[in-house]
Amino acid sequence: MRTVAVAILALAALWASPSEARLWSHPRGTFTVELPRRAEVFSFPGQLQPCAYESEAGNCMVPSTITIYSAPFASDPHSTCVLTSTYAPRTESMNGAALRELTRSPFNSRNWLEVMEQLRRRGETELPDHPPDAAIRTYVDTSDAWPIQRAVISGPDLVINVAAQQRPGSNIAAACWTHQTTNSDAAAFADTVLGSMRHPRDAEWR
Image 1 (tube, rainbow, N blue to C red):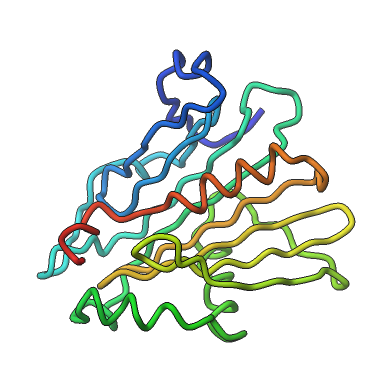
Image 2: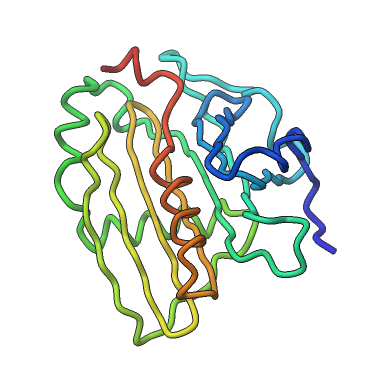
């Protein structure tokens, strides 16, 4: 039995149409994400409380973390995701357009090490280590106004999809992994979660 406290969303959503996704917003105003059908959010106690400390610019200074399971009531959930947001004072005074342009450039290895460290430090669910012989592919998704840095780590028994975004005063990172490496549903689940991460203030910063 999982020991994390459960923040179960509406159970009626379990019977929604397969294509239906629902928008979930963190109570601290740090990120939003679309949850695919049957996915549920879990968190440690206190994680879903409103922000206790905000900067002068209105950014939450308290880290936010949730875990998403693709099928929490199945005996073997095929996908797990961890989403985190941390306060980033270095970018808080940046103009939104300037930051978007900056993040169109692909992350280097140091950037990705920082992303993985954020996920390992803040994640409520332990992020698995990738195999030493894993293939790693990185790219930038520019299909939305805010670029998303993406990485795919593929091994014989594990696939980890990682995404990172930046906003003025905020770093958002997420990872989804599955041991069912040929499962197309697992790949679609990861793409939905990682590709739908946004910040509630995006319209303001555009």
